[in-house]
Length: 237
Image (cartoon, rainbow, N blue to C red; front, side, top):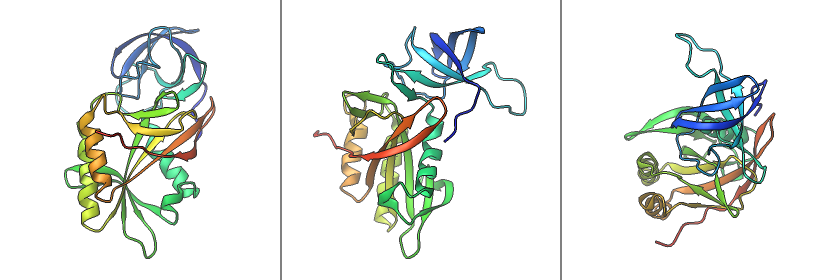
C-alpha cells in the first residue's frame, strides 16, 4: 500500500487528546490528526520522532488539522505505521494477492457488514465454501517480539468476537485478524493486563470455532505491506 506524499518529519510536542497532536516541524508548529485512538504510549510521547502526511481534501469546512500523523519511530529507530485506518485495506490487499493463506480462495464480497449488534469489517465468499465474516484489528504495541492488543480496554472488541462466535454457531466461518503494523513481532497475544475481559472472551470464542490470525507488516516511508503470518497465543487466565 502506497503512502501519501510528500511526507513531513517532526517531533511530537504534545498529544492534546486521542485524535490531535502538536508537532514541531520545519514548517513550524502544526496540528496533526492522530488516526489511532489507542494509548500508544511507547510510540507517541513528547519528543518522539514522527512523520506526517498532508490531510486528504474533503468537502465541507476546512479541518483544524492540516496533517495526518502516519508513522512513528521507536526509541530504537524502527519505523511503525500508527494509522489504524490502514488495517482493513491492508488485509483486503493481502487477501487479493493470495497472502492470507488460511483464507485462500476467498474474496471480499462486501465491506462493513452488519451482523447482530456489530458492524464487522468484511464478508468473504469462496466457491463451495461457507461465507466467512472477518473482523480486522490493528496492533502497534510490540514488547520483546510479542505484539499485544488492545493497549486500552475495548468493549467494542469484546462485542465483535462474541458476535463472531454467534456467526460460527450459525454455520458461518468467522475470523478475527490482527494486522501488526511493524515488522518486529514474532507472535501476538491479547493483553490480559490491559483488558482481561477481552482476553477471556477471545479464549472462549476460539474454543467455539472463531479463527484467530495475525500478520506483521513491512513499513517504509513509501509503503506499508503485509509481510508474514505470526501465531496468535491465548493467555492462561
